[in-house]
Length: 266
Image (cartoon, rainbow, N blue to C red; front, side, top):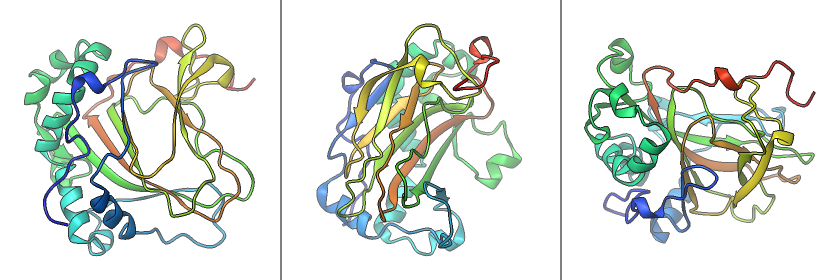
């Protein structure tokens, strides 16, 4: 399928919800034919047979052994979603929500959000010159191994302190109905964190995002962006998705005032 399609084509700031935190949900995100072609050609990880259930495997599409397996559709998709043009789309659609969550973001960057310089995450040139790009755009193929007993790959948490924005586009295997939906939470009272994790007694479920084909969830990271993967039932299917992220060069989310000393679940 020719042409470049973005996961944000046709989206606008009015599509972004602030409950329980700033997020964009898009069902049937990509054109059906393109999604089908990408799904059929999605690379798979080489995971040993004795790998534990719900093990997370990530593939970097720029690693030579992965890049050599990508179809032209995937090559175009990856190139666009790690480009300055894609960050312009993010600034257009998610910019107001980003500034509501982080009012100092433009002061931190030193320029308006849409004017921030970008580089691909893990680009060796950018890593050698950390001041060259204020914003790092990343894309990974994500996989969770089959499940033998009901369990979750990741409980309630917030993302790392340098992460500005995260997004997941789901690519379930045909016939996979084992669950693994994403839950968005709000705190039941005061913010309480143990590292990046949140005890479920401190979190109230608000929005459930189905692990369904061609479904996109994009959200602004902050101390309030609590989310987690719900348990999957036993299945032989791999849970598949593309992970998009936007990082700053340094940590900027300060969770220290909300850290607790007792272990989660104690």
